[in-house]
Image (cartoon, rainbow, N blue to C red; front, side, top):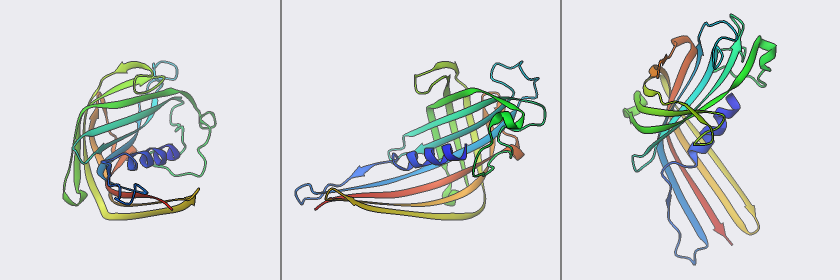
Length: 229
């Protein structure tokens, strides 16, 4: 799950608010700048129903991310991994946000993987306070099983109302990358300011258990340059 979150965050960083500024030097340079704000939430939901009695199992590990582009358009996506677990068992062996080098196979933790559901946002609104002290996400999700963005069977359209409350100090991150191939030099940099958060609210009938959920509020800025020698 941690590896999947890292991939999704990387995809967000590459799609928010793109602006291009080609140079006047014969089109041999390309520059783009990306800015935006994001929130993400992760949770574990435990139904407490006996094994084999629920359509989607009895333990659900989910992740949702929403991002606001510079034109105020808000997009969101989510996924939920569903398991049937014996009482007291956790498919990842460590609760929400657990970081491990390798995720243990579900069958070794007393759980059976049922499948995954995917969601994408509808009519989403995202507001983020100054200094990332709080945020609120509202709207709804189209939830599918067996695929995403029209590739699966729609199994629900739950309303969403999530409040993020920042905790702790602001963190800052920076990433740079540069390489040359075939006479073309590529370079990119990314700066982020973020704050961890608690999450409250709901996705449909599901609410967030404080000890099994968490989130982040993030401000992103990145640049990409391409230069042909």
